[in-house]
Length: 355
Image 1 (cartoon, one colour):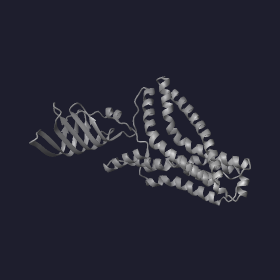
Image 2 (tube, rainbow, N blue to C red):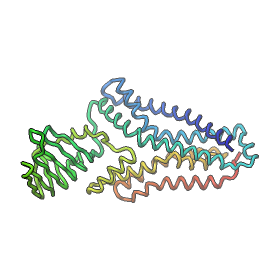
Image 3 (spheres, rainbow, N blue to C red):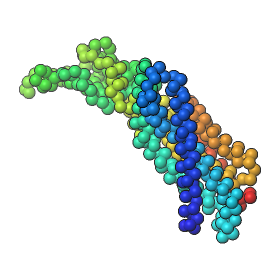
Image 4 (tube, one colour):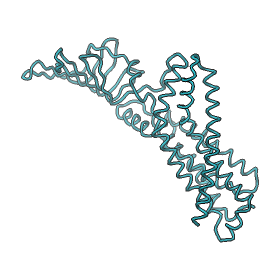
């Protein structure tokens, strides 16, 4: 069994690392053509950085399809070379091979999670910034949100907020500290919410702490107070390392903070569940595919392969519907469940291959 396992895993690895780079190269060429068409700044180094930075996001979709094709090729080779017969004659069921393909997909899924959590947040930031430079104009963020951030406004004023919608210029839980010439704190404002206006901040439901001397400290509560400090939301956008949350942990953190402070978090929750559902796509689609790969009818095999496209479109559609609150977020997992059920049903139904 160990020899057979090693043989199957070796074949899957070899074909995966042939097919995956091939698709990646095609993806890079497509990105290159697209950016050359849109770019207003013809800078080869910037174009190269953009194409390379875009690859981890493209890998997210290339990995599952590369894995499925690798599985099809391995099974087809085993059948065509008649290597399947000694396997069956030794009493090894056909689903033994299918199970090893699924185990291999679990390893690839782990790599997919690492890509989403570690590479994509950094690469997305780079390619967005590079795209802005190539277009020679700024891009608008879909949801410009800052959270848990300390900022230095000038030499005497410092600010902290838990949550700040940079588009609506409103936020929650703010702390503003003012220093004197000796860099000693003289004023501290705390408020539950705030709104940014030109050259000032309007604070709601908070308190002001005034320090003249150590022995002279006053605390005044207020329902609304205007503090004359200048905050530029556009400059804050440039300071944010994660302009748009990408990974599962980033999306969860932003969605949780937005929800806690009464902001409409539907967009972030739908994206969170969509990523949670699709990050396991190598496993889900492999389970689905092994139900078809032993079929002799090429039409059925092709139909099974092409139907995997429905997984991505279906999940995206359900996520979009969930983002406006028309259905619960957990419905986003419906295509994962559907494809797994179909895959396991067909796999367990397969006793012998149609040779």
